[in-house]
Length: 178
Image 1 (tube, rainbow, N blue to C red):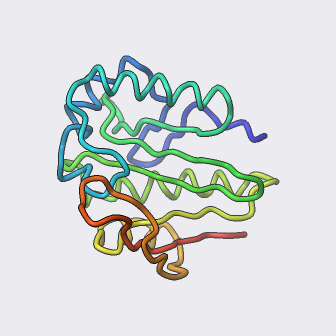
Image 2: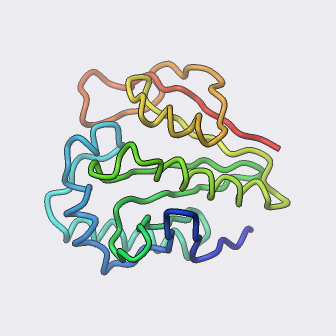
């Protein structure tokens, strides 16, 4: 099992393990925003209490080693503006991420994805990092491509986004390998 660091420092960002105390900031910054949650696998949160419950479950998965997450902050601003998560399965790991709308198009998510994927691929047991994004989410596709991921194909009816009707949606599959 890999042992992830609790923190990452990049040129523009500080990534750290989230805490339950981040619930208010996460709720206010992005978890209740329908524009941000549109392509997520969850609906907008209705309270910071539901975010706190989510964080408790997230931290449990972290301690079990099944999922690792980091809150995204800008230096000097100790407030979560997004999150990036990793699920390791054997020799590969998938990532997921979210960022507050007020911080889109500033290179933050590209930087976070790059830091996490580079760290993952430096681990002896990890050979592949992958992610999916909805085919109608060009911002997410762009962040993956700028992070060195290659589009490998389209997964038809792959993921359910509860904020869209009509069942599973098509996603692009992206990968980065060593």
